[in-house]
Each structure stands twice: as C-alpha cells, then as structure tokens.
Length: 447
Image 1 (cartoon, rainbow, N blue to C red):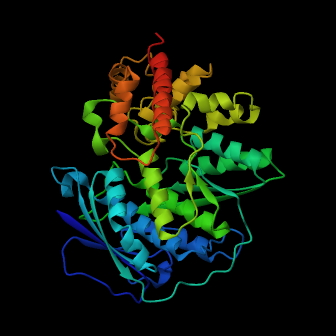
Image 2 (image 1 turned 90 degrees about the horizontal axis):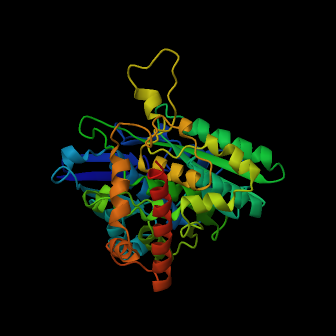
Image 3 (image 1 turned 90 degrees about the vertical axis):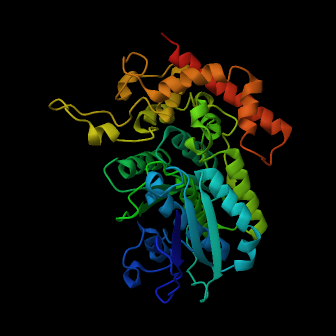
C-alpha cells in the first residue's frame, strides 16, 4: 500500500499529485505562520533556529546541506507516524514515496538509488525519492558568530556524555545537538541539566547546545509507529546543519559504543529491520560516501566504533567529573516509561526513569558491572534478581551461545551486505563485538 509524502518548498509551492494517501509537510525554510498546509505531518522548531538574531543562528553555506535536511525531515516524519501493521506489506514493510524539491537536482539524481537503498537498510521499507528543482533561490543567512571545530550528537545517554566530555577536553569550542519529542519522558530536562554541568566544569570553554523539537503529527490515516527506525537520519541532518554553519569541514561526531552500533540480531527472529541500525558502520560509511559524491565536505565520525561500552567507561575511569555525573544520564530505549504508565503505583512511589530490562539498559549495566560501578537501584527492574521474564534479557542469553566464536560473529556481521571496509576494519569490529558480548555474558551470569 503506497504512501505518498510531498514536501513543499514554500507557501507559494502548490505541487501536488492526484493520489490517495498523500500527505504534506513544509521545508525547514518555511515560516510556519505562512504555511498553507492544513494538516502537516510534522511539527518542529528548526525554523526558529534559522531566524534567531543571536549566536544560536543557523546559516548553512552549502545548499546541498539544506537539501539533505529537508530529505531527512520527510523521511523521519513519515517513518514516525506511518503504522506498519495498518499500511505495511504483511504488517511490516511499507512503500513510502517521497516528492522532494531540491536546489541541486543533478547531484541528488546521481545518488538517488544509493539514498533509497540506505534508507531501506535503515528502516526495512521500500523508499522511492522523486526529486524536483526548487523554483526559487536559496535564502541568504547572516553568518553565525559561533564557530565550532566539532559538533557532537547528544541524546543524554552515557555514551554521548562521555563523548562530549572527551571532546571539550581537547577543543576550546563545542556544539551539542539534541532532539526531543513531545510527552513527559524528561529528555529535554535531562539534556539541559547535563550540558549545564559541563559548562560549570569547563568555564573557560565555549559550549553551545542546540535542542531541537521535532514531532510527527498523527491523523486518522497515519496513526503512529512504535519502531521509528529512521530517527538517526534526522539527528544526523540536524548535526550537519550546525556543522556546516560553522565551516565546510566541521565534522559531526556520533559517540556510540561499537556493540550497540553493530547491533547484531540477538536471535534469528530479530533479523533484518527488526534490529535497529542507527549507527551501523554500513549506514555511516554509505552516508559519508553519498556526501562525498554530491559535494558535502562535512563528515560523520564515531571515535568509539571499536570500543565496547565498558571500554569507553574504562577510558574515563579516572575522570571524577564524568563518574560523578553518569548517574544523571539515561540510556533506556523508553526513558520514563514506568514513570508515565505504571499502574497500581503505591502512594508516594516514584518509579525510576530507566526500565533496566531493554537492550540499552542491559548493555549499560554490563559496562558498569565490568568497571565495578553497577547499581541495580538505578533501574525500575533488576533483571538479575527478578522472577519476571524479560524478552531482551532472554535474547542476550541466546546471543551469548549464538555468537560463541569470532567466525559466527563475522558471518552475522557480513550479512549486512557490502560495506566499504578493509579486512582489518572488519576484524576490529568482530573482536570488539566479542569483547562487548563478553561484558554482557559476565553481567547476566553473575549469579
């Protein structure tokens, strides 16, 4: 069942197609107050960062970066709200047909197939992107006063906190980019609290935080989708906007441990798009290749790609500031879930913000356990002592046996398809995964 998405260049753009299940959104360069779209599929605050008259102001110099931001916004928005069970083939894979106006149509046509393929790898869907030329020239922006050597994605998790702490120790300036959605999960408050502490710890450094709100808007046909595999494409495009506003070569840093980046299917049933690939090396290297081909010089890098989470933590074990504030970070895949939804709560009982039994929580606890820092009291559920059955905990027990040798890990890794990696790089990933899984094994078998 095909779903059409049309992004409009501005309020004067009347492009449309005569098909059912067609939905609209504006370019990030369109003032929401001038929009003519009655029911847009996304709401965001990106435009405000393009028009602010202070050092927050975004001013991308490369129109290809502007194009990529719009492409990513459309991809993220429809992925977030198009329900797989209702509109997907066999209740899963969706047919998503995008119509995007771009300033550089020749360049994007050259990589159209690569873009569609990498989006399919990311989300498990069929993507078709139809480019059309923008009718008007790219708006001019006043140059930003703030220039940063690095832009770091900051979710509020443990890895990203270690990442920004490492970067600010080596650089005089740093821009952090965060994304939050609606609801009361506490994402925004957490991100602001941690960056505030970072500034207080480094008063001589210039740290600027960008907190973007982007939320898909559901309707009677697009009822919402819980998997949301394409969130990272939006995150990266926001980082790219900031990086290109600083310089044409400022890089975007993704601080993510290698174990969760590879995210090999823990069980055979979790193959394909059932496992997220938000920072997978195939995905990141493919995006960097696309950028290079079209003419975007800003690169994406992950300095921790060959480290397990426990090894990331071990590198900063003597950093008192990092260790004292790790408790403030949240790694959970559903932050605040129990705070929001737990029923039959006892009077004055306040559930923890982290569930303790999802994949990120288990990997987090395993890394802390490996460094003698694990505390089950920081989580709503203790998977080690609980009598409840937790799917991800049981999946890890299967994975420990499933990936018992480097050869088995290699076979699973190479199932992702062609990757622009050398044999040495592949071996580094495999050995890292083995070490990371051993951390989890030691944690779950501690009884």
